[in-house]
Length: 262
Image (tube, rainbow, N blue to C red; front, top):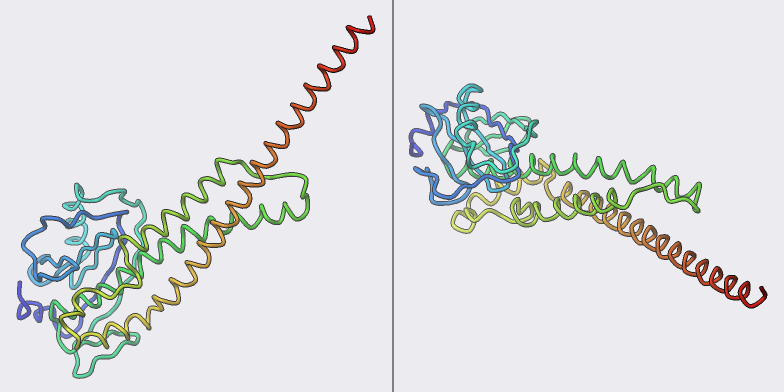
């Protein structure tokens, strides 16, 4: 499928993004519609899909049945597939002037312009999933902090839970930096500076940088809170060990004195 065939999508069509797995193996997928990333492949007579290492797939002009078949065929390439994918959809129309509002208007439905749209939609669904995951941990930390405030002598948590919180925060941060590259501009823009404005408008409309900043703040808070609680837990264990040692020493002293007296 070339740029001419992509125009067969019509003057208006749907874009649908799904974060379906932890990772998609994009190596060796052929034939591609473009040498640039994301990997763009044809789906059906006129539709196409863009695949990302971050586990996102963005469909353009693909009906739900063809979409499900395509995802099923990706099966061996999916690592850590999600039962409930994060989704986002947008209406695309072809017009004289490019604009981003309730409908995304592009000058032509070329592969390159759809790749730019796909970049933002993919980042949005990856952020959406990470926001959910960290949000759940964030809510778990809050009641623990409240209990600490009310009963500072008691530590109402388990060490393995704290380690899990730290691990989840580290994993989300790794995904954002390594695979999703949320704040990085796509390589396509280095060769097509004329698409930079479209990318910037989409990035602003979907609040990619703002959402990333909020997510980073939550990541930092969760990680620091969990580490602090873990240190307190370890300090308490160390203190208990010291109490046991002191108790044993006192017990030995009492035994020694008892032997001397009797």
